[in-house]
Image (cartoon, rainbow, N blue to C red; front, top):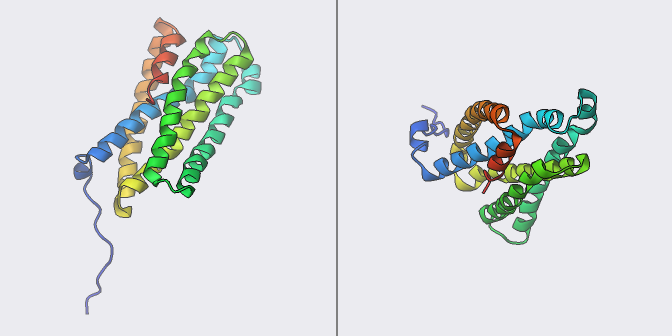
Length: 194
């Protein structure tokens, strides 16, 4: 007597890449990852080159934006979860929080105009908080949009493009900073979430 497996074969990647929802999520990951990679890699350099902090001072103050990123990640999940508890559809709840984050982050491009170190750190902290609030919900969207047997493949596609973009953003930012300044880089990436 042959045993029947309940495991269904995963859908080929090429077929998933034709799904508009996968394409949309991938673009959302590419743009939001671009801003996160920028902040992740370039905050210490910005603090050193533009705010003239030495390595010791960066060690004292540089952790602050990343600490708020962690809080933003928790807040993003909590905020959409609390909307779901109030009766919202999970997809609508996540999108609402993502739009709130996407509308706030562009204002953080003013970091290049801030004069005091506390103002710079506060603006960077606000940016990283809301970027990660956005990410917390973006990473949860595949579970709302796809059956469980496709979620891992969709996330794999999104994250693969995410990391490819990290390479490009790092290279592009370096060229912009060397030839112009940090200003166009901060202004450009600030509008990636919307």
